[in-house]
Structures are given as C-alpha cells and as structure tokens.
Length: 371
Image 1 (cartoon, one colour):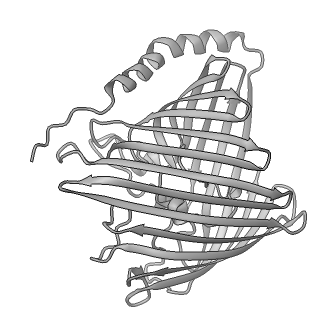
Image 2 (image 1 turned 45 degrees about the vertical axis):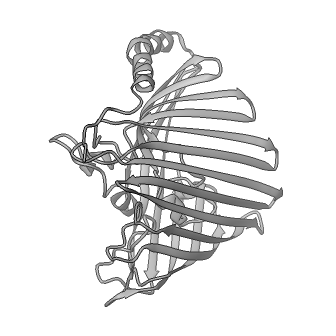
Image 3 (image 1 turned 90 degrees about the vertical axis):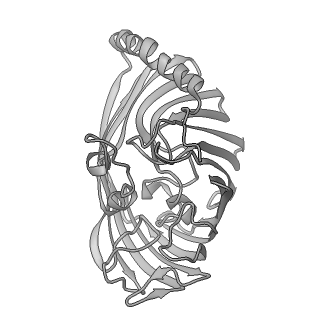
C-alpha cells in the first residue's frame, strides 16, 4: 500500500497563513493604537455537579460522555475564567479551564514530539485573536471553540444540561484560522483551516477544512449547516479522508417554546472499504415560568464500523436515548439543572458494575454560576 502523503489543501492553507503573517500583525499594531473603542471584560463560570449512574461503574468514570463524566461524586464539570477584548477593528478571548469534562474531552489529544499533548492544551479553552479585514469580514486565529454542531461546550448555553451523543462525538474545539463573513444581519458564513478533528497538537502533515453557514430565515426559524473534511491518520499510515456534514433547525413557535433538531453524518476511507456513521437529536424546551423550564430530548447514534466511537468489543455502537430535565434559576446568574437520562444499545457495550450492559440510566444535578 502506498503511504506517500501530500498535504491537503495547500493553496487554501497558504493563502490564510500569508494573510496572517504578512498582513495581520501590522494591522493589529496600527489599529490597536488608534482604536479608542477597545475594552477588556473579565468573567468566569463554575458548574458543579453530582451524578448517580445506575450501572455503578467500578472506576467511577462514565462511558460515552464528557458531561457528566463521574459517578457518585461531587465534582466540577467545568470552571473557567476569561478575558475578552472587544474593539472596532480587533478582538480576542483568553479563557483557561478546569473540570472533569475537560479531562474527558481532551483525553485523545495527540502527543507527537516533546512539546505537544493534552497536559497543557486541555487548560486552554480559547486563546484567539482577530482583526477586521473589511466591514463585514473578520480573520481570527488561535485555539477556539469549534464551528461544528448545535450544542455548546459550555453547559449554560445549551437547552439540555447533558450533551447529545452527536455533540460529544464531534469537535468541541479546534486550532487554526477562520474567516467570518456577515453579508447581512440574517446570514453568517465561516471558513476554517484547522489542524484536524478536535486537536491542538498536529498529528500529520495535513490540514482540515471546514465551513459553516447560519441563516435566520425568520424571527422564529434559524437554519445552520456545517462540515469538516480532512485526514486524521498519522503520517506513518495511508491517508484516510474523513468527510463530515451536519445541519440543524431551531424553531421558536412561541415565546416560551424552543425546538431544536440536528442531523450529523460522515464517512471515512478505511482502505478498501468506507466507514459511515450518523446521529440525530431532537430537543424541546418549554419556559413554564420566568424561573422554571422543562426540557426533553430523544436521540439516536449509529456507528457500524466504530469510526468515531470505539466500544472496545466487536459490537458496533448503535444506541437510542432520551432525557427529561428541569431547570431553575433561583437567582440572577445562577442556574440549577436536574436531568434524568437513559441510553439503550443494540448490544452489550455499556460498562456496568460487573459486566457490559445493553442499557444505562443516570441522574445528575448541577448548580452553575456565571460571574
């Protein structure tokens, strides 16, 4: 088998890097000096939780999730502090983080050479700077939250406390450069050139390319589409091109009701064959009172060839799940969320107390504060 590799998308990568190296720094220096609108705001977020997994995993680590990651334990899901720079022509954000979700999500961060790996990288939620190239065009670069999906890394910003399988098994973060274009108040488009599929440390000579477009079709409907294409194999192996696509619809039929549907699917070359996977979720949230909301979800994920989700067995990951939850805002900037979630697999792939099980259920309660 020929393992010769030629870096992907050299023209796109070169153009973006040229813009960074030759144009951005002088512009940043000159404009920052004259920009009287520059402001820096500091803030933070703490999300503490307790979760009880009815399968009672012996090692306390919960499988197939980043949040909540531990069983029968009071712990911190996510805590971060941030500094956000805002200006007419420049912007940036630096955020450092800690928590069990961080440990779980960055566990696969590559380590190539002596200066890479997740030991330090996991603590940088974002370290990104941007410059306005045109009135409707920004160039940003660094480590930043992913352009993929309809659910955020930060629990406060999601309709449900726990993440759908499609969110946990697509990138939450990436490292690279992006162009963001907003031709109108209803359309935002983005182009990314990144190291790869949720990595900061590079694992091969290739780069991945991804795009996103969000269209507010009406005050009640927002449509989004996104993708990521690249190779995720090391240079010592033959390139296996991964092609990932996704789309979501957010519908607000009434002031107190929000509906969110998402579909992701992808494929990857596996030598003589192609591995394919897909996942979907549907979430409904009702704001029952000004301080109380009810939320429910149904979801499904199918990865026949274990391209994305390795089960550790010969059985593929095929599972259907659901959750119900209640959110209470007892005070400004505070959110108390409680959720019951269940997952049922086709095969025995979910760790239990003494053996693999076909199903799983757990209860989690979280108290979060934004400051």
